[in-house]
Length: 145
Image 1 (cartoon, helix red, strand yellow):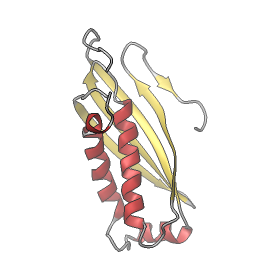
Image 2 (tube, one colour):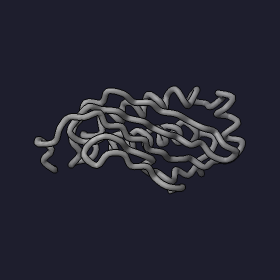
Image 3 (cartoon, helix red, strand yellow):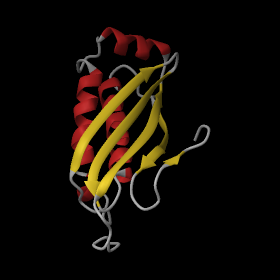
Image 4 (cartoon, rainbow, N blue to C red):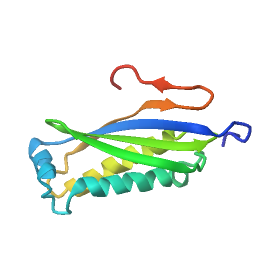
């Protein structure tokens, strides 16, 4: 584990994104809130928040940080659901891993809730979109992942 004890506590934010590709019928069922397991997005949001808060338990060399804000957003396109997770902290290290974990677990939750009607969903393109704060300052991904 990296020693971050000499680093100052600053406000740091990270945004991560991933997507689930699925059949139009599955997206329509999500939109209608008619999945057998219930309304998918509220459950996926809660799962993402919990995942962000527990990242250090899942990723062995990740520092436990005080998570001060987690927001999950979803966008339904013609053949995919795009999930974006934003995490904020005041800590000596950034919340990139928390944002990535939140997006991934939210996507896994969507998969779990959709599998009764489609097992062929594909989770893809998990990546960091941006980060800010700390010694290295702001970083923004250029173009698509």
